[in-house]
Structure formats: structure tokens, C-alpha cells
Length: 149
Image 1: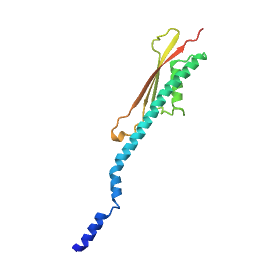
Image 2: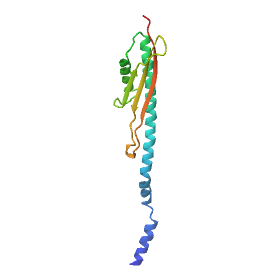
Image 3: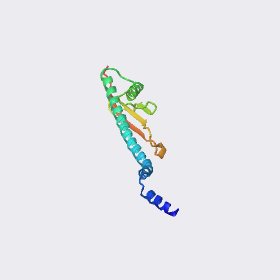
Image 4: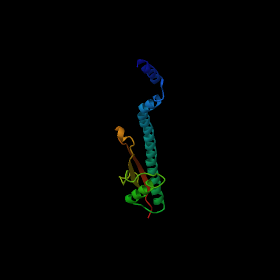
């Protein structure tokens, strides 16, 4: 009986068929988290660029409206920026997007100053790894020339 066990042990020790599967099972979770981390960074960078460009686009739109003699209120500017943000150009999620347009004290005579504040809660794909969700905030002033009467 002992002679039959020796060839089986030698055969088992030299068999490498399951080694690749075991190595993959050990490394797969780390590779998966690394891949999701790279994806998370890419999505965050895209969302950061979208928020910054949305503020610039909204400010440009408001300035053009004023130049055409169509003075907009802060609420109208906010709604216009929100409509652009959820559109196909920026593709931001409306539930994660917060826009505020305020009118601080103006620093320049003859100019209406407003400030756009955009906050976006970026999606978190690493919540299972206890990585906190990131929030993107961006502020931009707008200087609008008051049309002459």
C-alpha cells in the first residue's frame, strides 16, 4: 500500500494545473480594486472638468444674454446652467448637482457682479473599500455690464 502512495504524491507534487487558478484567486481581489481605483480617478477627473467647464459656459451664456439686452435674474441663470449641466455636453446627474447664483456687493461701478457656485457629488465606486465619496466644488464670478437706459 505504501508503494501506491509514493507515485500519487510525486504526481500531485509535480502537477501544476491548479497553480494558476490558485494564484489568480489570490491576486484577483487586489487587481480588481486597483482597476476600480483607476476608473474612480478617471471619473473624478472627468467630473471636475465638466463642473469647471459648466461654470465657464454658464458665465459666458449669461454675459451674452446681457449683451443682447436680456438681463437675467440669478434664478434664471441658475436654471440655464442646470439645463446645460444635465444635457449631453456635460452629462452630469441632476440629483448630484447643486448650483447657486448669488449677487455679492459689486466691486466695479456700472457692473452687476454675480457668483456661480457649483457643487457636484461624484459617484463612488469604491464604497465597499470604505473610500469616502468626493465632492467637487467650483466658484466663478460673473461681471455683467448693466445696459444703458
